[in-house]
Image (cartoon, rainbow, N blue to C red):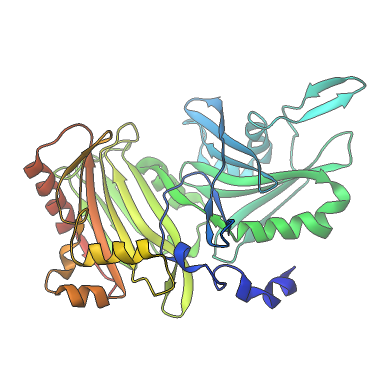
Length: 376
């Protein structure tokens, strides 16, 4: 498959035609999406039509989507009492939790018995995909059948995400395993968790290179500090109260950086609590070329000219009050200079309920004051 993909690389994301829209887009998704071509041949991130949920107890949840691109996809939120690292070592627990949401039956005669455990894995390893993400690869033999279950699981701050396939033994090595390796290269995902889980994740997980270059610290009741190679930010209670239950979403995307396409952080959202919608956000926007949609080019112009919704005018929605604007790092530039920049960053604040306009502008200004843009 590798040689076939290499021969046809000009047809596939991120090099192929119709890749540009996705390379200039940013989606927030904690459930794994797949980068694929749509009916219009444009590459995009596709999620499930329907997600089922199974409770694991102690605030643990398993979200599953069946038959998505021929695979079973999942998002496993670890119970509070389960350390993240246990999933990396305890394959029995991993599959036991997956089987709470995926139905696997053993047929004996005319009766079916649901399998709730497969025991220890038959094989285990790691695979680093094309963008530096390290996947846990685990396989189990299905008792009394000629089938095998293979799981690709990616550590994330709240637990694991990934996909699995159950198939006949003879087909795995010849076709299914190479396909799973290729699929891992095409996963679109945000990294999300509470600050306490983030601290645990950064200490214990096999981290992608892009996350190894990020530093995060926080002091409940005081501040959160986050630094990436592209920017640094610091929030205080004047912007949002910070606690162990505050949440952080790093919105990763694929975009062009010089001559290369990278997978990196293109958006950051900090929340007051995982239980409410009070959040602050910063987003990266790359200058679109002529081969992107008119909508993307128009949005770039609105950002550069600081036109609505990027004019720091508070607005109301069912979710509360929002305010957006261009970060003041570019305040000395005229519109033409902003239009010509390769990258611009916007910031926003969203607070539940109806808020005073002056208070919203004050929060946005304080949020902006804690941000340093390093990328030019």
